[in-house]
Length: 266
Image (tube, rainbow, N blue to C red; front, side, top):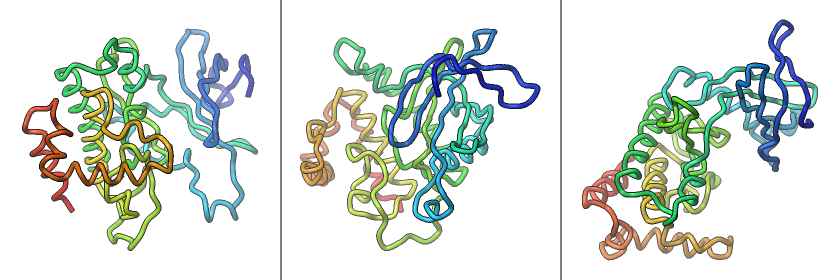
């Protein structure tokens, strides 16, 4: 789809103009739409797959539309306006949001938030995860890039976005499960091919919060797949007394207690 293309989502609906392509990758493309009133939306598109391929691959936008429909009136979740498909693509149209937390952090002079701001953001992120968990969903990809602020009067609201990795909680765990999420933030259990649960989202939330405050995680420099075992070792070290002191050096002591509670969850 090219910039300048005009779109109408139903026969009598208004016309939207594709004004910018935000990104393009293996999972599809993201565009900004604008109407005659200068209102904006975001449209995500992914190529449709055959029924045979669907047996082995999850349609990420189908999952995302299901989650957004179930959370459409909940604070901090983008509003879903349209979803559907063409002969070649699936698409969803959703609320246009501001920059993500990773981008905001990197724009700061010290590349990190103050402890006060980080705690407020972290509390909002936890509320989004709580709402998702109460609806029976496990997010499975908690990281700063997947949380953004709103625009205009909603600029003080932290939003959760990108639900392509989200899955329903299983009543019975599999003996082994594929690793899902971003390796820097996933839980130690997920590193070990364990079935993810609500607890794993919360452990990832802890790692994300540490990065917001400290500007980086102890294993942030381990960027290649060859160094992933080192990340596992460092997460293990963070469970011991000395490692935990290093991990939470910039935090109130209560955060170590919160980490303990999370690790004891089922």
